Length: 97
Image (cartoon, rainbow, N blue to C red; front, top):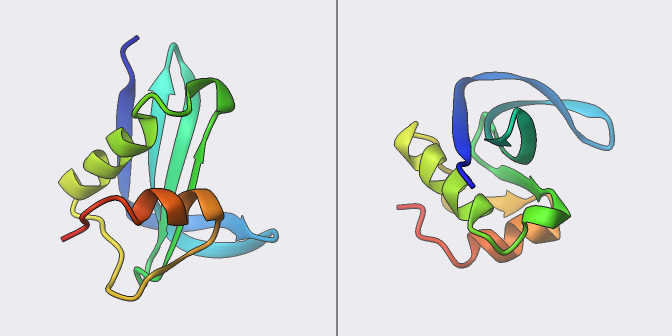
């Protein structure tokens, strides 16, 4: 299984909060031409949203997106809060510094 991680460091508008557009950067995990995971970080660095397709959870997909985000220079600011519980649990285990 070869997963490709694509970081989009230029902010764009994404519907992340109850359909409201949020200016954010994005990292996606791709496998066989399909998106299996997405990581969004809003432009002020205060919110993170993370999702991984259930079939690919607990296989390092979120961590791979984390490293792709770091390589692209993306990281939340100190005191960042997360949009969803999955992002919170995952981010708590990683060193963004």
